[in-house]
Length: 412
Ligand code: ZN
Image (tube, rainbow, N blue to C red; front, side, top):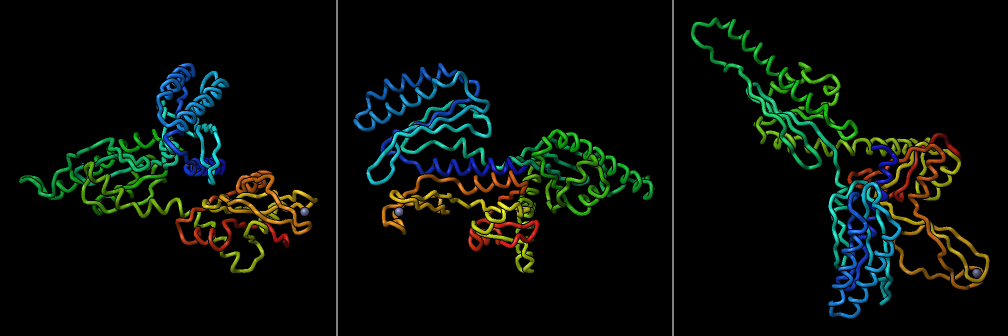
């Protein structure tokens, strides 16, 4: 995954989190999924029909809210001749703000992947499942279950196992028939085994080479010993694929059920892959920190200062970081302050240290947006770190979710 993809994914994940927190009173929040090839005029016609039907809703407030939401969506649709590239989703409704306050809000999301089916949904919460599904990993692995009599080639996409090809061999059993010399029999058997491995290698290569390069994570080979080792050492796969072999795993079956067995056997190795890269970065950070080299920084303030000087080589941001940079001003005098605050913050109440008037937050910027933008300008690499492993968890808890490996000691 490239940096900008990782950032987009982070943004999208956060957007969904925000949507999940929004609630309405009755069944009055509208979620409208519009695929690329849907005619806007068809959508408009359906919404007008819904508007008419909404007149039958008994509760007056629900009726009013649903109808205003539909009107607002219809107004937004006027700006579109046709849906954007991946289609779009319109969320609209009267949202509860707490303390009996409400607001009619319309949010439009253009998803990172195509919307496949049209959907109109009205409920007390927004319908987010199709978007949440897009967050699921789409990584693909090649699967190969082999022994000398049988082999199965398949793919693992996300969590789905897909068996593609089943092969059987004509390799004779170990018992020779009468009349053959033991030596000759052994020779023929080895040739047959070699031929079968070649056949497996060709079939598997053909299937694996069709996978989009950027989604293809690697190949898992399962089987009894020493078959899988023989197959691996004999380099029967295409040379590009041979390099993508992640590991060999002991399994008992080599039919389709063997593929499931293989995924189970490899589950630890698979989980580690992603985390390994992140772990390496965190370990480098920890090493520099312990050796007191002056080549690390952590926490919002220190990292920011180094970033602005161009001293940061790699910025490590916790995936769980949800903070905003608030612009705080006095309502009465010239007092101004910038402060990093939690993403979901309660009502702000504070007096001005100069004149004791009320302070007010006049604007907020998302900290991750701000920092990654700075990184773009400074040629700094950004890595998002999950909290699913020890060092990643430490980044969030002990270092405020932000750390940096520096190019040089800038003395700040
Ligand atoms: Zn003041």
